[in-house]
Amino acid sequence: MSSTIPPILLVGCGRMGSAMLSGWRERGLAPSVAVDPAPGAASFGGADMIVVADAASIPVGFVPSAVVLAVKPQNAAETLPSYQRFVGHSVFLSIMAGRTMGGMRALLGETAAIVRAMPNTPAAVRQGVTVACPSPAVTAEQRALCDSLLQAIGVVAWADDEALLDPVTAVSGSGPAYVFLLAELMEQAAIEQGIPADLARLLARQTVSGSGALLAASTEDASALRVAVTSPGGTTAEALRVLMASDAWPRAMSEAIAAATRRSRELAG
Image 1 (cartoon, rainbow, N blue to C red):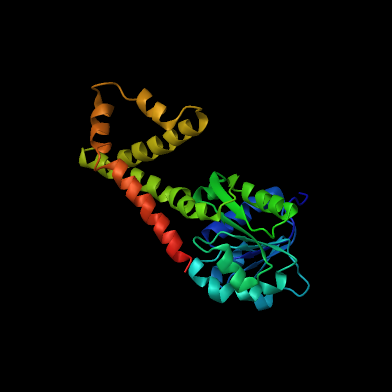
Image 2: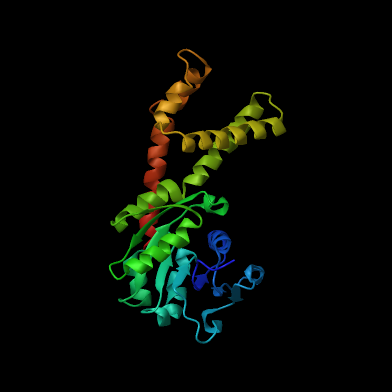
């Protein structure tokens, strides 16, 4: 397979970093390098990827087109300065929640070209959604490269206002957990109503995943789809009467998104 992804330096082979790597490989990845000290990280190596334990072990002369920062945000202060030597040569694509471009420039250098992005975990099955924001130093070519890197794991949208990435983190970055919680609670409630555990799990998971597929395929608003499945006076209407009470789902979701947004801002330090 010919390479469509140029040489990349991947910093962090955790869940999201490894999902991105898998997507790049599907598109053809030029010989690249990953940095991760975890003992199991070596398993991500291959003909297209050398895995090293630290920045000092990066092969001499290797200059990536992009440095992808996929480390935990709390590790940024100790991690990022090791990659200052790539400023002026590479674009830095960060998927660290809460870490602002200003904070990253303070660690990398004021001239660093940075794209801050927030993907989500459906990236593992190439169904993620990512919102990205470029710093003024990012060139059109670098933005296009980052767009290609992120498209390998799903849909990409761009924003000019970095402040939007905090609520984006709360909605889509953290959002898969809300959906998983829904499936978990539906399964528990089904068991409470006497449905066997294995059938309860099947019903909850398939209902959530199938509804998501229907939503993705439809041009209608989510509210219209909800109304279409709700017969007046029926079982769905009775359930929604409980869920849509002012002190139930509407309030809980609003408060949850607000809390996650606040935490994203706090992580900026």
